[in-house]
Image (cartoon, rainbow, N blue to C red; front, side, top):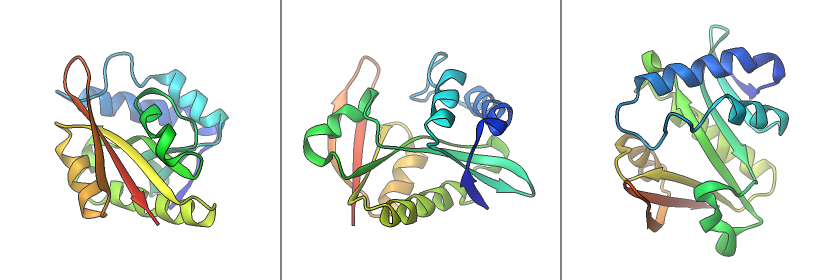
Length: 159
């Protein structure tokens, strides 16, 4: 089951975040990003959605219209009819089981039901799992931008 998370889900969501960050070796996320403040903000904005299995939160994604961080590149071309998927994560012991794809499919449905024409996602060049999923779901790859450590890739899906 996928549902919008509430403030009551804060502890479970932050625990998932910490478990995911602990399991990463070389990834776009850092010690400071994302953090519990991002989870709290996403909850207050009612933008955090969670996938539950047997009443346990096992994956989340933020579905937002707010442009910040690497998402500002989308501003000129696709705003305001773009839904941005941010901070998608799956519990380490549940990875490679199609949960991120379920969240992405839910995002497509959510976007269509709410009048969005595009879905935007960013990821790093070395995030092979996310790139694979985005190409599998027919996202196009219009941009790359160099930062201090690697390239950020911007993907877009249009309805």
